[in-house]
Image 1 (cartoon, rainbow, N blue to C red):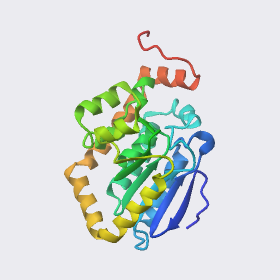
Image 2: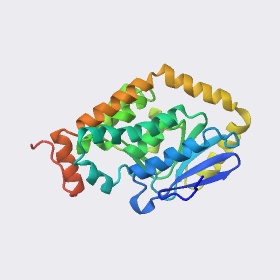
Image 3: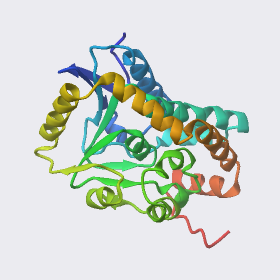
Length: 262
């Protein structure tokens, strides 16, 4: 495949593929191009038996700061159909990750926000540095965290889910581990070593076929197919609301949003 990408890099070593988010100038913010590149790489290596595991990491001290401002500028004038198609792009990436026949690990250094936190949540195992931050601040700017809610609701307790999704609060790595959002907290100096030790153990001691079949089974038991499709509709519908327009306009103009005033 063409390994020259605009927003990501890939590195293959020791039977695993490292996908590196590579938009440091934009704090690895997600846009359709970046999402499509992630999708392309995952699909290309899906049946490659020499690759046993996927690692997603970043090239900077920010994992992903959410949505790209230029991309948000475009969606403010989208039609219902365009919003639906746009929501489906991220939905397909999450679906691919959740059903992927290989273990997916996220290595988080720094902030993982909104869609960036969605990528973390869709991963099977998460390692994070002590200074990492996690959150879904969509409600603070008039968005709805529809897609991520479909699988986050099965990952953490409902009380924690409501705290995260209904307030948009950011939490640190220790709190994220405490509630079950991530698996391991490491210091900055040894996170790569801990990840590599874990990867080596997984590759040598687990059946690749068993992992693939187990992930399919979990996806089926959680009934995620229908939920993800419904979430895209909810997401697209919310984008036509007055609160969405107000929140997006203020956010793009870097103006404070006072939701107590209409």
